[in-house]
Structures are given as C-alpha cells and as structure tokens.
Image (cartoon, rainbow, N blue to C red; front, side, top):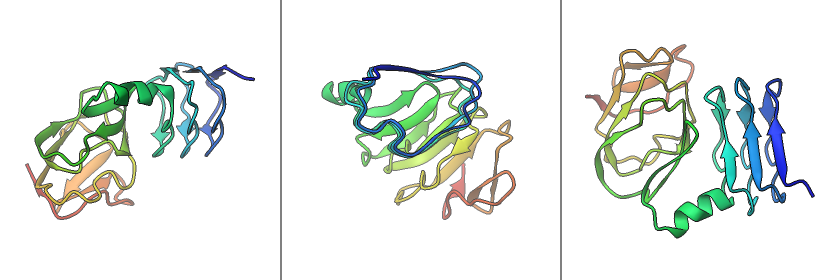
Length: 178
C-alpha cells in the first residue's frame, strides 16, 4: 500500500477521513500549498511518523492527526504541554492543568480546537495567527484575559470578546482584555 504521499501546491483541501487508517509513514505538503486539512484526514495512520507541513496551510481541523505515530511518540514520553505540527498549535497534552500565562509561540499560524489548555487563565496570541478553530476557547472557566498582538490583522478584540476580523465568528466570550 501507499506509505508516502506528497501533497502538491494546487491542492485546496484534504478532505475529512481522506487517509484514515492508511499505512502512510511519511506526509509532505509542498511549500506554498494553501490547503485545508479536514477533520480526521490522517486519523489512525499508526505508522505516520514524518510530517512536513508548510506555513501556508490555511486550516487544520480537530483530530486531523489523532492516532498517528507522530503523536503517539510524544504521548509515550509523558510530554505535558503544547504540541505543534509545523506552525500549527495542534493539541495541548495535560489539558486541564492551571496555567497562568499561556503564550502561543511566535510564528504559529493555526490554533486547533484542542490547542489551548482548558486551565489557562491568560492567553497571548501572536501576530502570526491566521486561523483559530471554533471551540478553541470552549470550557475555559479560568480564562480571565486574552492578549491579542496589536499587529495581528486577522482578529479583533472588542467588548471582552475575540472575533474574526470581519466579525462573522465569535471565538470566545466572558473575558477581560489583558
């Protein structure tokens, strides 16, 4: 079966369950590819250990890489903290620990719904973030503030709420600005 795949620049979407349960060992998405990665696109690809993703990815849905060797290796080492796949903040292991100030690293372009720890009190979002998956701020009872970098052109913070720049999507509520 197929063990390696290279996604070319002209692919706009990797659909839901596209490679689910496949025998892939290596995934390369070409530089400049502006694709969206669908929910569970690589779910349970138990041999998928090598993942190369460019900064140009526009969206990555929850559980796109769940069940891969890449994530299993991180979990086996009892890692606790943010999990990045390229510049995607994909997950946060030890999700409910209290973290006073969670700073998303500069250069991060996408925040998946499981990327921010649920126990965070304050979250700092850098200018580089272009997409935040719906639900990224769900169940965050301790969240008191969001600090959005003033150079970020993709989101606005108004009346204690974070919105997409066009204000079509509300990403959180009930917080105060830091």
